Length: 120
Image (cartoon, rainbow, N blue to C red):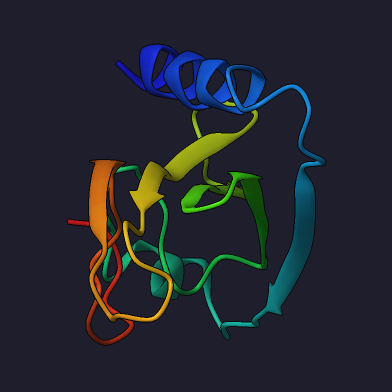
């Protein structure tokens, strides 16, 4: 499922208007933590097997405006407790039909939009 979501997002990037320049906005976030005992890392496990108490967590973000009104968002995470080299937290497309109005249609694997709760 994760590989299909990633392939769909990459296909949308390639399928963008070939005459328009794609605007890329990469970002990264590094989180470091320390716990006094190994038992502390077993608390608060998420569905992907990670915890907020991992020694490091690297989040990679990529936003790409493929054409006017269409933006692709990718978000991945790398951490010590991970089962895969890179796990996709988000891969979705946002369509804004009118630039002067606050209306957006989103489709794909969308992260929780409110707060900072981890995936469950």
